[in-house]
Image (cartoon, rainbow, N blue to C red; front, side, top):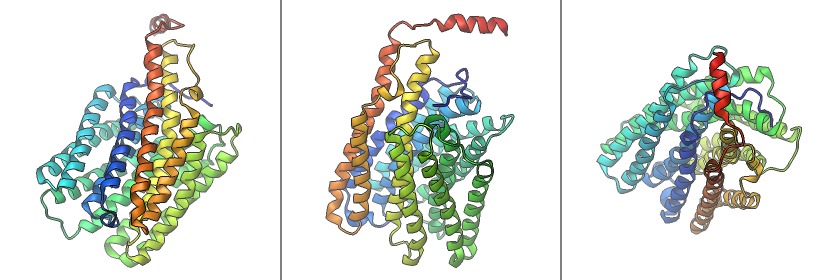
Length: 434
């Protein structure tokens, strides 16, 4: 693992990202339970209240929590960006997002106006409390890298997605959907998936793949241009949808081709890594590239079916691509955080990152997860299979939660012992030189 460029002095407390990471699989379990209990027919429509509730349980409760947790740690450590009072900000954001997501699920499923409106305020506040300080901090970066530019772009898309989402959710709260509701819903979903999550994954991968996997670096031209090309494609898609809807397929092909190219590049770089050791996170990255290939193709041809298979597209891209990468990152980032923070406190006799999580359980979790996603696609055509694959998804999320808790318990246990090296002496000497 290449740790070049890491900075420990600006790293936030481990609790800031850890609480977000620990909560994410719980929302995965909740989503699985909702799928298990839902009517399969209702879930075939992306605009049914059941589909909206389940989709956002995954996108906000799982993906949103993991992405914000990763940003909380990666901005200071990898980019040298210091977010002021990050501990307090992270706590406030976490509380707002936790209750906002729970209120949204309950409000939509029970169709209770006040609860839906409250959830809209909580979710908007929870995201903005984190995203705005991050954007302000990124402005102070002296020399922007490809990763910081990509992260900034993704956060700008997130900023717009938040307000569109609040508008859409408020419409359900007052039981009045505008004539522009469908257009805004499409913008919200496409920009959230490709503009926020997709661009963020690309930016983070510039650092993560060489650092964690000792994989070849991306070419400078690609790192400089790909985010701009994606942003241009998303803006073109917006314009065509608003004024020339018949030609929006052109922008779709453009966006899908760029993410397909990214997936191919990731697959090839992982195969070319200098230490080709089998790792469950490699399985997740590679499966994500395959899901994106099928998802991109499905997203394009779905136009010819008037969005009839939009749920399948969501499963392939949202579940297969985004969720796979997020789970793979959790398996790397959480053990790394434990090792990193214990090492910074002077502990040397600690388990390696590979020893913190049971490898057999990670393989079982991966198989159950992939089977459940494939099953959700088949269940679109054979409805009675849905509860079976929902159960598999629930079990996979429970195992994931256990695997994430294990390194944190190691951290707590070791923290109760005496450090091997007194870091306070080092800090005092450093302060004296300043």
